[in-house]
Image (cartoon, rainbow, N blue to C red; front, side):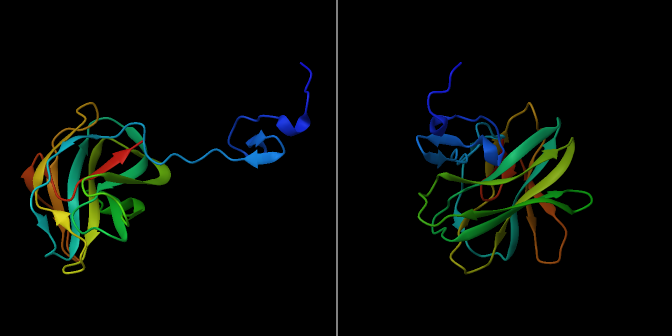
Length: 183
């Protein structure tokens, strides 16, 4: 095939040489703004709270391995600024991944996603927790009914951690705040 104009080449791939050219201008593909699939199938937030310093979220029981590349969080009433959400391996309390999620200007009730370096959650237990500071204006939801994709998860529990403490669980099939992972 004859190339009519070298400036109009199209490259496919992930390297610097794989950029797309639109005429003489190099155009980089836009990064995805969210996952194409995620674990949570339902979340019904309860009363908004702002009375705890620590971490709140959910304990996931992964029943199948799943590679993830996004961490998400529901925007609650009054959420603004950067929220930190972390994934920990439950028994070792080892940090697996961290995301900084910017809630500034987001609509209450929507999910906001942050890309992370891909990581595989293996079969086992994980804590998915958002940081909270009492009285800082970063509202989060009370313990609320939640369901996750049964293809990858088994029993789940609302989870919290006080500063310096261990992760603890409360209600079954519940979570605090509305956090999720996607790919």
